[in-house]
Amino acid sequence: MAIIIVRIVMLGAATAAGMAFGPALGIPATNWWLAGAGFLFGVLAVLLEWQARRIPVDRLFWGAMGGIVGLGLGLGLGTAVGAVAPDAGPLGRGLFGLLLTYLGASVALAKRDELEDMSTKLFPKTAARRQGFKILDTSVIIDGRIVDLSEVGFLEGTLIIPQFVLRELQQIADSPDPLKRNRGKRGFDVLQRLQRLPGATVRIEDQDFPQVREVDRKLIELAKAMGGKVVTNDYNLNKVAELSGVSVLNVNELANALRPVVLPGELVHVHVVKEGKEAGQGVAYLDDGTMVVVDHGKRFIGQQVSVTVTSVLQTTAGRMIFSRLKDEEGSR
Image 1 (cartoon, rainbow, N blue to C red):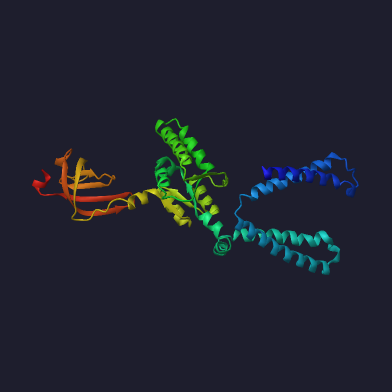
Image 2 (cartoon, rainbow, N blue to C red):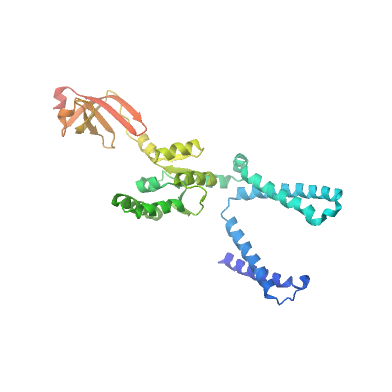
C-alpha cells in the first residue's frame, strides 16, 4: 500500500512538473498537453521501477558501473572534440557521453558471467538466492516425484515454473490423445500439490525467450539468466544442459543412486514374472523396480525363487542384476 501511495504522489508531481515547464517554453501553464506529457513521463518512471525490482542487484550494480565509466570517458572525449572543433556545440559533445554510457553498460552486462566471482563476494546473499533457484521442466512435473522430494526437504530453494512450461502443459492437457490429456492434467495436479506444501516456495516466472522455439532450449537460457539449476528426468535435456554449462538435477539419477546396493554373491528372493530375451532366462523385479535376469529361470515363471547375484550392470536407464538359481533344493 505504501509503494502504491508513493507512485500516485509521484504521478501527480510529474503532471504538475509538466505544466510548470509551460512558461519556460513560452506555452501557457494551463495547456493540458504539458500535463499529459508529464503524466506519461511519470508512468514511464513507474514502469522502469517495476521492471528494476525484478533485476538482480548485482546486474544493476555492474550496469551502473559500466554506464558511469562510459559516461566519464564520453564526456572527456566530448571535451577534447569541443576543443578541436568548437562548432560541434553541446549536443555534439554530449553525443559521445550518451554513446559511451550505453556501450559501457551493455558491455558490463554482457560480461556478467566473467564477473560472477566478484559478484559473489560483493553480494553474497544475492548469489546464494540465485543458486537456490530450481527450474522445473515439463517431464519432472508430470512425473510427480518432485512433490515427495520437496515434502521431505531434499529439494531446497525456490521452485521456478516458467510460463512456457505451463503453456506446454496446457497443450498436452488439451490434446485429443487421452493418454497425453491425462498426463497434462496430472502435471497441473502436481503443481497444485507443490503450491500447497507448507515448506515449498513456488514462483511462476514470466521471463521468455521469443527468439528460441524449443522449450528445452528456453529452459537452458532461463537457467543461465537466473543462475539456477534445471530439475528434470529427461536424459537428452540433461546432456544438452551439461554441455551448455548449466547445472542439472536429474530425478532418475537420484532414484538410481538411492537404490539398495546388491553385491555379487548375495542371495536374494525374487518372483519370476516373465521370460527373458535369451533362451531359458527368466525376469524378475526387486521392490524398487530393479530388473533381475535369472539364468535358467524360465521354468519358474510365476514362482518365488532364491537366486545368487552374479553381476550388476549400471546403465543410463538404470541398474540390471544378473543372477543364477540357487541349488535345486533352494529353488524349491
